[in-house]
Length: 182
Image (tube, rainbow, N blue to C red; front, top):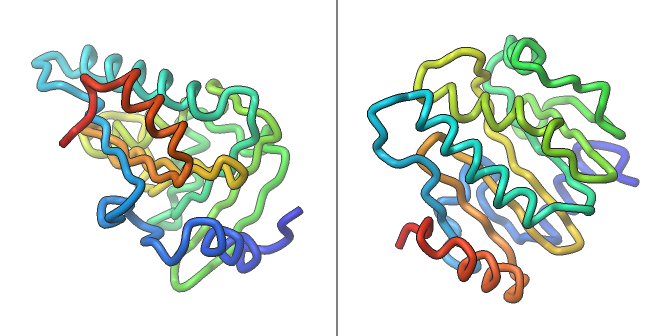
């Protein structure tokens, strides 16, 4: 089991290469970008649509698998904001927290994917950009090292998925082709 943030970062780099740990948008290979929210006039309908699309894709990618969350907390209060949004950090099977390369990092691990555990994180990402409560100013990577797969829900507009697993990316691309941003 990973025992430090440094060790986690080393495993991440060994698995995915030296990719940006704040945004996947610059990854030039093995990346799919999905649109999450349409230009709906009603913000509640838009949030509902974004949550639905996130749930679908996250379930397809992680169902019955383990999941690591690498969360950059952009401010000291963001862990409290996640708690206020409904994230029960103690429900994680493993927790690491500390500073790495100038960022306050929270690593959470679940032995088995749980959509209800992730929902506060998803909502925090979505709500932050649209100015709706509850939210936390974070960057979260949803990771599985054995697939390998990393997902970043960057805001209400979309998510990036990076994986060298051609079968997974082909299946996602076919299933959600109407959501793909080209």
